[in-house]
Image (cartoon, rainbow, N blue to C red; front, side, top):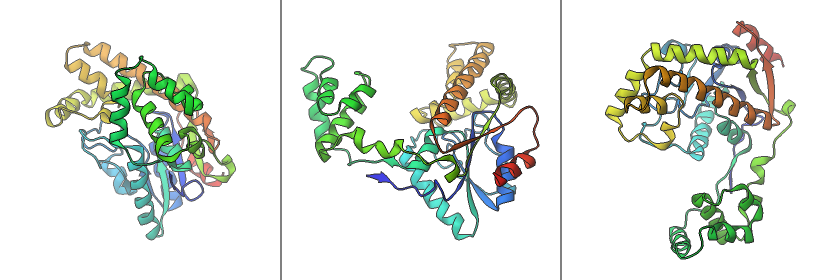
Length: 311
């Protein structure tokens, strides 16, 4: 019941926090390896979301083929399972051309899924879900959470009592399989040692990374991020929940709805980008497969790529 993803020892990975410098090193590394790049960025998937996601330029895409960029409309959701299926197909095509596969991007959940697979489980049973929801309306507020605690205390401990969607899914898995979702998800928690993989995470001192984030955000607004979001809302007024999660877009949408002035909006984007970088770093530290490559100041992308290739 997991999606088998044979990437952990069969591909190269370059990751790191937002604004750390992945793009330049990724291009240099791809050229050295004879690789094509598969984007590992959950927001670069969406068409029209260019400035705020720092997508590779046309020139960069001309230099090295890039995949899984601009594959979904902003009003569409794109799940982890969809991404893994698409990545698997693209990787097969790349290898058929006798090229190597290099994943580049900063979405840790994608990285984890590519390395370890993901629990898929039984298909949705909507009759079961409706029945549970109907019974919950006549019970005490935390009834579903207590019911889950009876059959899967580990999952119950991980989930907030108000997280009805995930609680129902955990109950559904137990109902359909007779096994707890926590035990079935264990594969997703087991990783390989770093020296068995080619997973490299670019890492910078915190203050330096924050300064780079500030510069990037200023450049995004100077390059027309507000106009880009305005145009997106004109063509896709109902942006998907996934697309709206992109740092920069949610804040500009609020600005366009007169919730903040422009100065406050830029400050919010910088703050939220720093918080994103912190969350990314936490994820990377939790993955045993990762090898960290320290960077300081202006670096020679070619030299860093050579260091990674020889590591």
